[in-house]
Image 1 (cartoon, one colour):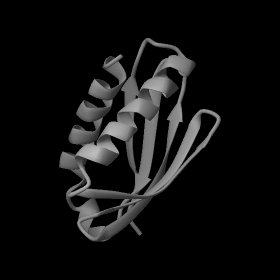
Image 2: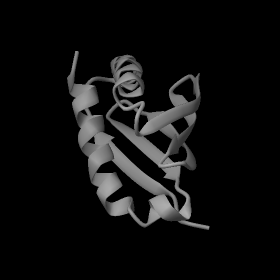
Image 3: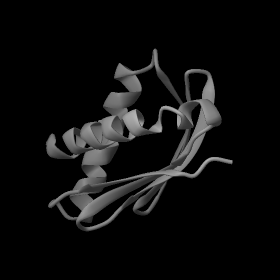
Length: 103
């Protein structure tokens, strides 16, 4: 079993605005990256998103917690994706930061 990949992204928008921006950004991600990523499940419960995705024919699941000053992603990756985790972590942090910065 691999260790979960954890990414924390600071923001200054407050929880409600960060959730709004995350929802809008995730809709864009779902449309732009369908060739790489398929979202199988996306369930919001307050300030937490639970999700399951398929990437490179590998399934992963995790949660995104939105706080007043940061967003924390924790995802459990299958073996193949875990081997690519350092590059994935940087990409997730960069895309998440862009997602939060867009109005």
